[in-house]
Amino acid sequence: MNIDLKRKKEKRNTVVRWILYGLLTVIAYIYMTTAPQKQFMLRTPLFVIPAAMCIAMFEEPFDSALMGCAAGLLLDTAQGTLIGLSGIIMMWCCLSASLLFHFFMRRHILNIIALNAAAVIVQGTIHYFFYYAIWEYDSAGKIFTGEFLPVMIYTSIAAIPFFFIVRFLSRHFGLIDESYIEEKSDDIVRE
Image (cartoon, rainbow, N blue to C red; front, side, top):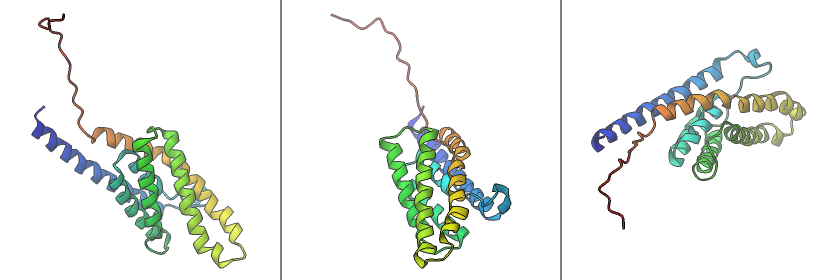
């Protein structure tokens, strides 16, 4: 394949892939903010977190840190919290996940569920601490078990469909692999 043609196709694939990633994150944000609360018994999962973590699984560390920051800002607007707190948390979680998958871990569904659960626990406990526990509300423990714990569990499970969607997008709009077949030649002289 021509090198210039390959570069053009890879640039096109990158643009299409990131547009689809952004669309996936926006759809997750819209569903998270408009879904009926009784659909998941207690609370709606925070769909933006598994979307960002799954994207971080397949992308470079810098790109995934930016995606985590954007997802965290969307999460802040959805929860009505201080703008930037979840952005910083998600930026570090996505950066850590991307580095782990880039250097140490395999891209497997159990790994992303575990890292997604870790990100949800970090984000949820920091949110709980700064908004409820630090002010010593009387029913802070009840809020944690009745609100935060179910959301953490549902959000951790929600990584499963996002994993398959992002893996599909990454495979079909990723880098172009070229295969070369070596032909057998009788002209090689061996001594």
